[in-house]
Image 1 (tube, helix red, strand yellow):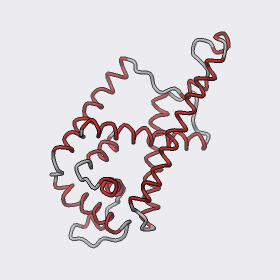
Image 2 (cartoon, helix red, strand yellow):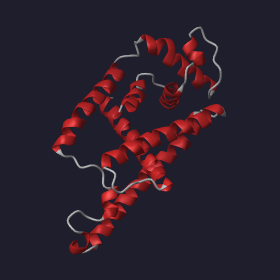
Image 3 (cartoon, helix red, strand yellow):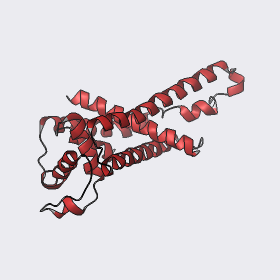
Length: 210
């Protein structure tokens, strides 16, 4: 279950980053001189924001259903396929150029499309994050939610949105359910609707923390 969870987590992150990069490209803000990690972070932030916006559109119209989410999920998936296609096309264009034309650093197009290189420094920074993400997903797979916050506020609000197929005012004894913003609970409702499993709610927390 942990391996599957990590694979799903990586796929969702990649799709959201691709969605954000595609949006940045359409906005004309994919700066060639920006470091690869900055472009990845910007793509991930914008992609997550776009997915939350899609969720709010479905929630406010009470179309937050498995079918609607599956259709909406084709958007980041298509963006991921498109970004992979662009990268392969950029590599093919670079391969056709003469070495003296592109220099030692490669073409600007490929430089823009290329993902960050795995240098020792990158691995030093990334390995603790990967290990911690794996631990979170493993813990979520073997233990049910047990924190006060999850049981009194986050999960009940997500379940209410799931049953209502969207967002509305929920009258509840805990005022956090009625009054506080609901972006995290909206993403958690996605997981409940699509999988019916509460254990992998950790995937949402890991994605937001990353």
